[in-house]
Length: 207
Image 1 (tube, rainbow, N blue to C red):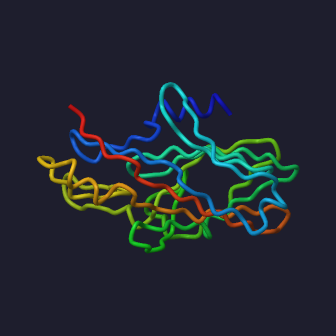
Image 2 (cartoon, rainbow, N blue to C red; image 1 turned 180 degrees about the vertical axis):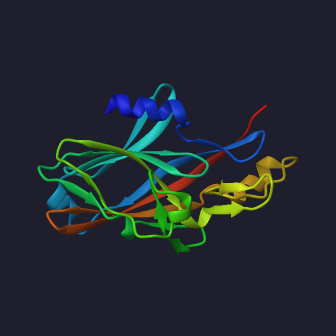
């Protein structure tokens, strides 16, 4: 688990995501809606704040799953560990992204070609005791640009119009905004729906 996590950290800043030459935003896991009666069925549920290589990050844990989220500017990277005694299935066609405005959309994950992003995606299976490292990206944020310098593009998770000459005042409009992921997992043919909420904690102007 640690080896996988450190590999992701090498590729993605833990909570800082650039959306301008001198501006970054930090995103934290602010809330998790666990399946009904999760405390009874799944034991204690908790969000854990971690400090890994000087970076602050968060993960969710119960008796069945342990999931670390690493948010980049365009996607959600995660490492999921199966703590249960059964295989876990992730039904990708049922995973959904909920934008800051409340709009719901499909997602794609690692291994899916951009051109196939709206097609049905087979479920991922995580055997007991095993871990899965993958990504979640909203399909609505993937688009193609034609022309000589065109190609596939990935849109930002958060799009802002901040006045860089008055950052402190204008950024307050965006701090606290959230996006959510509906992330079901199937255990013994029972679908358990988690909703992970991510909140903008701060917007920083770099010198």
